[in-house]
Length: 131
Image (tube, rainbow, N blue to C red; front, side):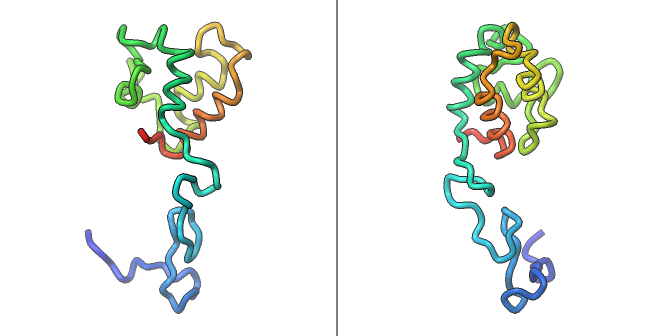
């Protein structure tokens, strides 16, 4: 729609009305530091997530139909149940719900590494980017 001067938020008068809220919701802020999210966490690369899937999931969720976790594109395409990732929202992402509950991967139960489940959640919350 183009630039709209009225859309600039002045953050309650900071900087004579010229300050805007950055992507981290900071008034007059500079945004996240390169390589980090707004909470200061290092950005999770898809390659880290893919290695978790390769080690634990692709034996069943390969190229045999249904959900395939063999590539970023396949993951984001979802499976027979639809989308499994909601970028920015791990709590409502079916994939995270399954691994967090221990129902996936099969036979994992409570022996799944919490650090891997947490890393998947962080990656999803950071936007589930292919970087």
